[in-house]
Length: 116
Image (cartoon, rainbow, N blue to C red; front, side, top):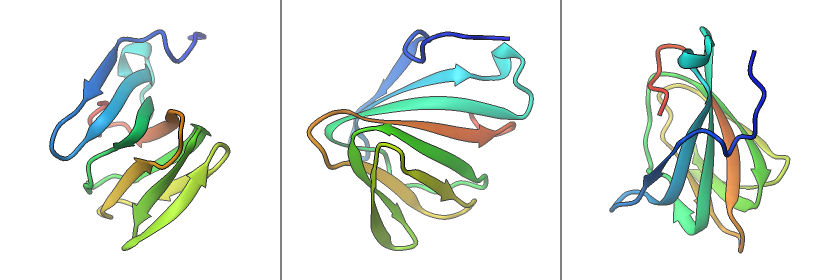
């Protein structure tokens, strides 16, 4: 069992041509004995974005703080604190921060997918 603040695990920052202002953490993963899912928490700075990408596995997202947009099926959908998104496998997607504060979201991926 594990109980802690999501900000406690070591973070990894992503910045480059295809990603801007993104920090990610593995909140719960295989090192914790989670055999079925990995819970990741991402923070996206103002005007930041994740890379536009696709992969074989589905994942589920819960938006905890901020305002943004999710690109899926060729359109941008607005999201804010309390929004959820389901991303099927092999679908191109991206997340952008469109607000004035950090966009914070929790992402669940199945076992076998890269944890970060």
